[in-house]
Length: 548
Ligand code: NAP
Image (cartoon, rainbow, N blue to C red; front, side, top):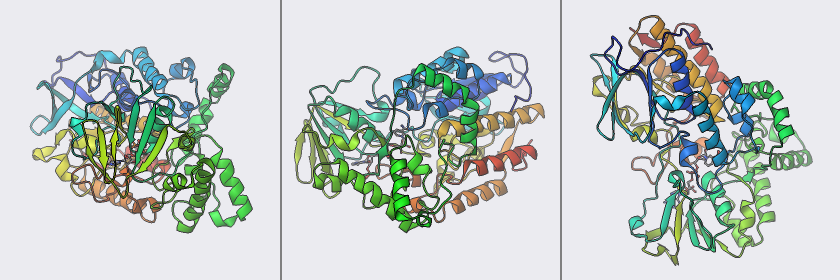
């Protein structure tokens, strides 16, 4: 999609609108960077406010030990610039965080994006102003900034959450949340370390920390089904081969329901003999990336017997890999089936429980009651540590919105509008929040996220370009359009086994006030269907949007 029109470059404050900017973008992660680039290409005066001191979003904040992609690196990077594709070499199939952060800095430098980004700038409020059809954004430091359009690029997993346990501040040792990991070197060498949490983050961090810690105690509430990542280095020659296949790689992602390189097998689980089934699963277990999760038999996520069968297969793998049968059983989930929560990918995770320096403590029946000055206390034991690592996740999807006071027309708060769960139009607009666009907000396609981000950025850029080209200063989703999309998203969840499981995907977080009940915050249909819906909307001149 080419920009609608390129206007001459304008500078801050020289506009007849009296607004500081044409667009304000919140966040300089993967989506914010590309959004800045696109809108700037369209001749807009754009400002990005970013909480961190550097670009990268997720890949800026999550610098915990072991952090890396779960998507194939070359399927994750930007596809919109031939120069980036030509110049950037990935060195591992699943890039580690430092390399990804470097990549995003490389992009920011290449397109001189930093000049329009204000760092260390946390947006506290964003109020729509009815009279001027604009947004007023207030930062933590009290400064106010106005724009016609507001684009939120704040990510679905970016509001870190600590557990609600008494005494957290009293601990005298080192304490870190994985999503707020410090920029300075943190060494676990020779230390007594605790990790709380065994989601995708915990699994990566635990595996790495176990290599150097004197002792590592893992506090696990509910175990997750994990599968091997099968990462390896990319040689110069292999990178050249990958580069030659970029068109096919991105086309494959475009056609896949989850935007990954893996697509479901069109057979049902019990269409094949047991022997064939087990061989298929073995091959998937040994394959890199998410093959086993998103490339499995097509009924794995809807047929309970099928799901039980694949879960039993993976349970056997855990038993094979963990020496102590009691520990192995603790690591096997019994409250949800394989793939019904996000599948952590691991690189030797189960084997660390065979090490003498690692202990697994199940806190399902004996929760952590208190963090003390020297460690923590569960229902039946007291522990001493030098370091506590909180791998306790995020207030997902709506959490990053909740942390900003966002008010639409007539002063309605977004939090209030979404009290019973999000309502959106194609996951991008919210009725009564005119001129506000969300990148990877609720009810939008996610999957291999940069692929969804690129589409969202381009759709939003075109929509804003359409308004500008036609002299409109106001755009709001119609009530009918919002209702229709919201209903469609809710319907798409029906019959999915994952909809019956508590996880960030179903909006449940015991650590966040008011988030104990499952909601439908995620679009779980296929990305091509989502894009078809959005493409049709654009091709028809945006009938779901009131323009003035
Ligand atoms: P998460 O999946 O929500 O896991 C949080 C963990 O903390 C869970 O094990 C949870 O236990 C535990 N926990 C929370 N509160 C607790 C408490 N009060 N006491 C004890 N344990 C507690 O969060 P995450 O691991 O950070 O992952 C979130 C998402 O980020 C992933 O699903 C994935 O989408 C993304 N991610 C991606 C990558 C990648 O692509 N490479 C890597 C990491 C994460 P319960 O399960 O019992 O609630």
